[in-house]
Image 1 (cartoon, one colour):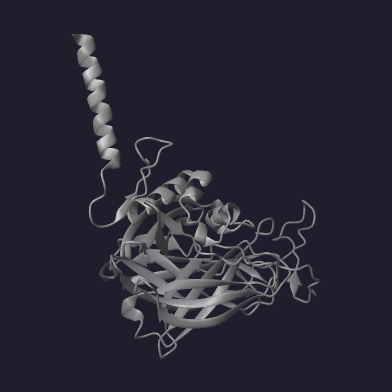
Image 2 (cartoon, rainbow, N blue to C red):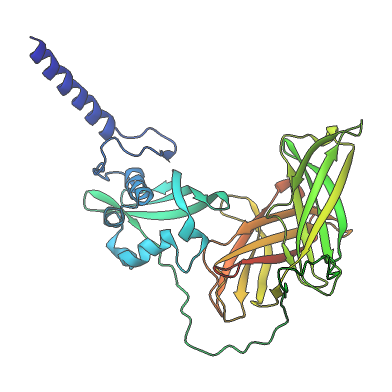
Length: 379
């Protein structure tokens, strides 16, 4: 009797798992969860565009590349190597060090044989969580749906000689007994040009510009302390990566310091402190910022778009854009930053985009972009 009951329970459990696994998703977004599907190594049949998209993305998340590529339409014109590189990156780019943590997808429109879906991808990266929105086209092939994978042009750099003509500062530390203080080497003279404190959501933001007034390069970080009406410090934060850290002589950089969950109404004063350290540096690689324009993206967000062009012969593995936005009086009203996912190869360009808060779009009259350069073996 007990044995028969055990068999019945096992059979019922298996039946419920199968029903749950094959049950179609309800209306709305399809969400990719960290735990994946109930039966590892098996994907439900892609009999809807939503299921086809989910199958591919779940396999990408698990890095099951062969199985993920099965869900790609043969009309895509991409091979498996290019498909994998689109997800894993190359040349030590930010994507190389990132992992897909989850996704949300929703249909934009669909017919009996074709559909378009918008997917929001959630990445974990060394610089924090990142989100990416992509649109995909799907087609019915027989009784299943397949993803038409977009062909991405990969920069091809021909063999060539790039003349090197740039300023460079070396740092000679001397022997162990030679301390900087004993040699009377002063820190670079760096000054805060402007400061503006604003309310941003549930928190406060302190932003502005800083300049290296010296004739030597400096590694710069800006700290800010918000103070209440009694003169007591509420919190202290730093600019972290929202600044161009290495400033060449006379170079100006925007900075931004975030104070999450601290209302500006509590703040009566802001104490600013800039730290500067002498560092070796060079003016190469030179990165040009081109084709800058403010425009809405596919989701209706206002973004500053442009292209970065690497004029040098060195690869910049992780380009980082920091942009300052000004009103008609030249006042800094916002500072935004963003990382470029692909490496910036020599004599090649990559697009960038940083978001501008909707409430500030009407105030922005001008903008300025600086680029941090993170390169393997040189950062």
